Length: 222
Image (tube, rainbow, N blue to C red; front, side, top):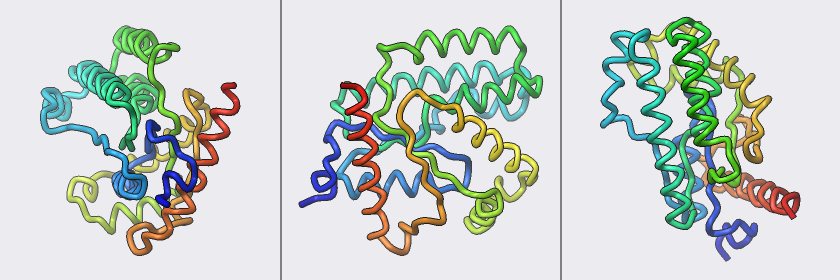
């Protein structure tokens, strides 16, 4: 018996992975996809027409970038459900407004008018009964010390050059965001409780918890 059937996870489920940089979202996405025989959905950045402009001028391009992300993630969310589900998604549409757009507004790199327009657009598109919310959001959690260790270990040049204060702020913003998130059920996983890179079998207890959370959510809807 495969793990999806063993733990009674519907074949049309859509599961989203969330968490700050360094927690292993892509690794978890690939591991769950393989174990459940689900498709993956990763963020597409290569074709983003605003990204380079944004990094050269935050004030001018933050609104454009966030609207672009919102549109692309909205289309991807619809695509997964129209396909019939069975997806593991790396990063959620909710993080854009709850963390990144809000951060630009609070830091003054997005004007109050632009931020209000963005929030109104997000609420009209996403926070409605008609939007296909994921069956489960898995939040990968860890201390800032553990996350910084992982960032150093993987050695990406841009991340090594980023001030530690930025990662500390991002970690705090993620923690504050998930504490109030209620758009769909949330399963919190501490990154020290598993090691799916060196021990593939450690993914099974995670899948068991996924099955339990999805079944409980379905019972509450009845």
